[in-house]
Length: 155
Image (tube, rainbow, N blue to C red; front, side, top):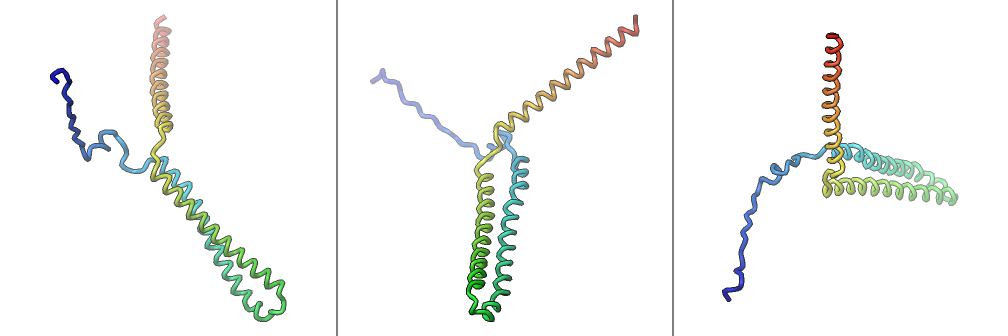
């Protein structure tokens, strides 16, 4: 029994409240998320506006065609066409409404579960590195031109 190694226990102590500050993450939404919301939000709003506009137009058309139904009830073909158009208007209004709400829901869920892509961060770092490199190279070339200019004055 003395030959067997003893089991070791490891204690883990979580540190609350330091996670965001240690990793350097942002507190608010990133610029990419804000830009995506600003570009995708009008799509949902436009579809909801079209749904409301179609619904109001259908109601006005139905209100105007009801007296026509009463006065000209023997004429069934125009009544059937009007009823068909009213049903089409209601269905179109509902389709626009469902599409607008589902697109807004998709945008909300997309931003709730995603973070800034690593490729975007990588591209940002590459651009910053290249800008630093270009600045350093420009300084070196400027110093070289200046030194050659001073040499030219001496001769």
